[in-house]
Image 1 (tube, rainbow, N blue to C red):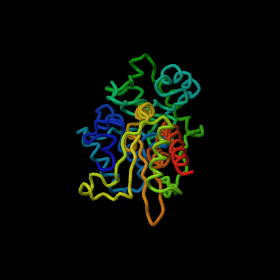
Image 2: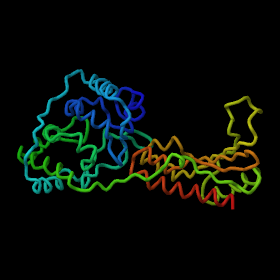
Image 3: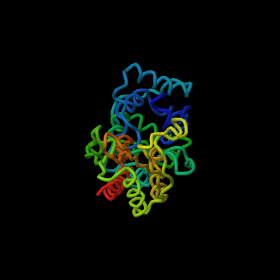
Image 4: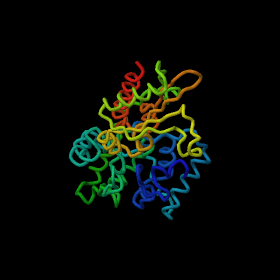
Length: 319
């Protein structure tokens, strides 16, 4: 589970990602759904695509996930469900939009909050997502609507009083979302943009002082200044030409963590200053590059904001 545990948990009990070991989930998805989801992910959502895994690796992952159930995979007929999509859209607006969004765009955020897990271990998936629509068969969607998923907000629509024909209409409405152009997008980022680097015309010491003033002027709290090698080499033997500044705006940190806890991997903020071959370089990680890797459209705006702040700090300190 080297590729999955960080989001879905070692035992599949969920976290940033949905709980794969949830019995109601495994009873309502077949192995084809799991394989296609691993391959395609969910563009613009939290789930990335794992296109580089071999077929054998994907099969091993599916077998491991299925093993949490202890039951064989459910079998769904490949035949399309026939229904009235227009009536299904009316039902969707009444019964589904409050969780899945008016256009089927899904619930917001991730499976965890800033400080604690959600009361329910899953948020409503994006039904208009091309990854979901490619992975889910009509019969699989129908089964979920008919029986719901215990342990999640998804209730049985039969229990709520809908007829089988109503459910068929809903399936047709969801399937018709394939005809709508997906509006999610990923920022175009190349590998050489993983780090923002600026050359400073000042000395190392002057650049560090300029950075401190610039950080404070952007309403950030300067937490500490340290040598980059602190804790990695014997104390006193750190390279004095490599310095790192740690700083934070706690509101921005809180808001970003609420969107996606994985931003904790690069927040609070850090800027590194190094003197190399007579040049003083100022560098920091590129939030837009990380946003691209995280595959979460909601996080893009926060990362775009952080990218702008980093650029302003570096420009102010080196002009």
